[in-house]
Image (cartoon, rainbow, N blue to C red; front, side, top):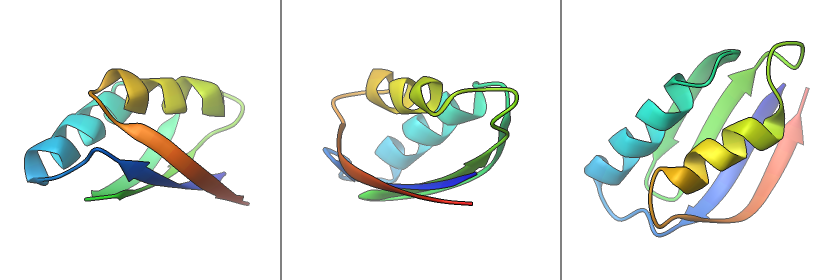
Length: 72
């Protein structure tokens, strides 16, 4: 499943790297693209839950997920 997150609190490339590293540590992540304010990732629903990936973004720093869009 593909998820696009719209995130506040990300201001630089360091923030992007921090979020990307946090996501890459979650089993089941297939790919991710992180830019300031937008995070896109694809994951295997049989291996991990969306909530695990959202939690990883939140734990990465002072980032707030404003909304997300899901697509198959």
